[in-house]
Amino acid sequence: MEPGGGRREKLPPPPLVLPPAKAKEGPGSSSGGGNARLEKAKQRSAQQELKQRQRAEAADSQVCPEYRQSSIYDHMPATLTLDPATAHQRLILSDDCTLVSYGNLHPQPLQDSPKRFDVEVSVLGSEAFNGGIHYWEVVVSEKTQWMIGLAHEAVTRKGNIQIQPSRGFYCIVMHDGNQYSACTEPWTRLNVKSKLEKVGVFLDYAKGLLIFYNADDMSWLYTFREKFPGKLCSYFSPGQSHANGKNVQPLRINTIRI
Image (cartoon, rainbow, N blue to C red; front, side, top):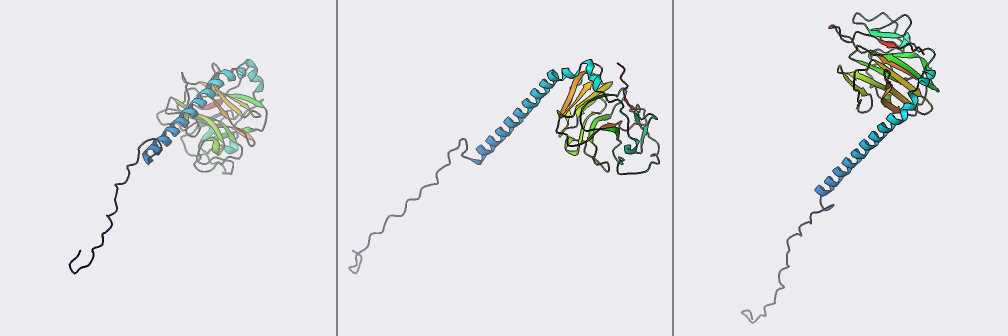
C-alpha cells in the first residue's frame, strides 16, 4: 500500500528488446555475394564467347581449304583497278591504276568530290560487287603499314573514319611494323608466322564470306561473316611513308597468270 492508503498498481515489464539478427552470409544473401555471382557469370560468358570464336576459327582452317584449290582463280575479277575519283590527294596511282603509294610531297591539286577520301589515305576499287564469287591478290611486300579489304560503296569518305564492320569496312591491317590484325571491334590479332608478301582476298557474296589468305601458301588468315546489304568495293590504304625510307613501297594488285 502507498502512503495515504492508495493502492500501487503493478506496472507491466518493459518490452524485451533483442539485438537485430545477423544476416547469414552465403550465396545470394548479401550484395557482395550477388556481385561475385554476377562477375562469375560475366567470366563464364566471356569464356564461352572465346571458345565459340576459337571453334569458328578452327572450323575456318578446315572448311576454307575448299577455296584453296587452283580453281579459286576462276573467280578472280576479269579486271580489278583503283578508282582515281576516290583516292586521297596524297596518294599516287600508276597509269594503269593497279598500284598505289603515299606521296610525301604536297597534296595533288585534285578536285574534291563526295567520292574522295579527304582524311584517310585510302582508295577504293573501280568495280562494285553485288553478287557472285570473286578473288584477287594484293602485293604488300617491303611495307611496314597497310590496310586492305572491302567497303560498302556508300561508306563515308570525309573526316576521320572508324574502319570496322559497323561502319561498312571489312579489312585486315599491318601495323607497328610486324603486327597483323583484323579490324573488328576490338581488333583481333592474327596468328601470322612470317611476314606477308601477298594477301589473297576471297569474296562469296551470297554466303556472306570474306576470307583473307597468305597468297604464297594459301594459309588462312581471317574470315568475316556478314550479311552484305549492298554493293561492295575493294579497299586499299598503303599507309603513310616516312622520311627514313620506311613504308615507301606501293600496294599493288597482283596479276595472276594461270
